[in-house]
Length: 392
Image (cartoon, rainbow, N blue to C red; front, side, top):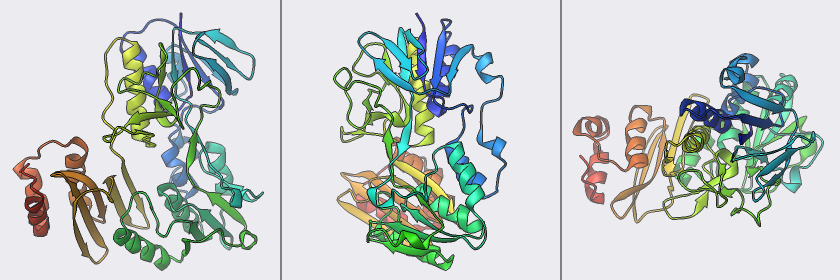
């Protein structure tokens, strides 16, 4: 029997490479609703901004699928997966059984009711980016709905093409799930300096004022083709650290899957890097490598208009916090029971990597590593000592 991979993104490609890299010699079939080869969605806004050519979006060479010996079934979405009978079927009528299946079907944009208008676009696929690049021209006026990481990158890309851009969100601040209010205010000031008009904490503005609207308001896992009475799932498929679902032979990876976080809740990591790690673990386990994926800790990095932002964990959690603000620089550390619970850093790339490593791994850092942080920002040492952290 063969292994079936549903999807053709980062998780799918990594699972394929891990299968073959682990010595898996049986047939592999890959089902994808797209006719494009695998691409990096984080590069779509760079293409819209004119910073990279279209071909740089794709990270698989033409011979990739042949090299890894996979049979592609592209251009037709999967419409049914029977986890009990172990069969998969696409809209083109291709139906087959499998021994193992890795669901890497990704997620689709959510468009709130207020924005379901003919001028509304999203940016999740290559076609979306191509369309936005064609629309973006000097003198146009656009609304970006959703002050998320993706939303800010879309704002930057459009503004760089001479488009007058407004940004809207029902939340009171940008990055509502990742940034503390103090950090968000600095980001908002920068956006306004760049000519971006903000509509925060209110409903949708008058859509008739805009030539087009780009919605970046979240995603929904693509698992509608799976019977949830057969497989444990909520928004996405529930998987363990080996990417196994509740059904034998069925795995999940990427944006369609949810793993337990430190609090035991099922969450979708929602990150390009996480999707690749998850796919690597799923493929490796089918190949017999007993590969566990890393524990889930929410983290984000982005840059826009010359600013660098990083968040790790839950910045609102913790029983104590330290905050440092100087000009456009901002640092907030939240502690809980002597451990780092959350981080925000704005325009502090010289120390962000060190603190991120500490927060993600919960490992001790060397005196040398932390001395760089303490030397540049002495109050941080005092914060570590006050919190009871003794990892230096």
